[in-house]
Picture 1 (cartoon, rainbow, N blue to C red):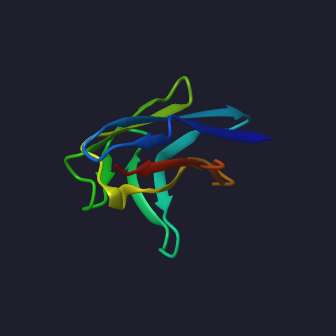
Picture 2 (cartoon, rainbow, N blue to C red):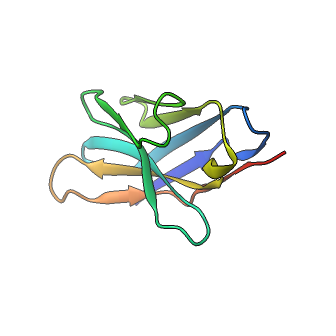
Length: 118
């Protein structure tokens, strides 16, 4: 059984910062890409940031220059540093992991709420 646990969400004022963490445990054969997506009420799920096994990163246009994703592959941990937060960043943020080898499973966490409001 594989579990992903996110932490670090909360309420922050516009312009503030938060750092989300994602810790994976369980039997994962080989971790491939890790990432974060978010979903706000009434909106479609959006992939915010991702990082490959080799460390290459990609970001949604809406967060480029403000968010930074990083990982510790050995420790099965990923982080999302979020700076200059805006009210439109308000959403539930979910961590995911793609398995790099067969059966190429994807695992997702339960999410952590991020609210940006004054």
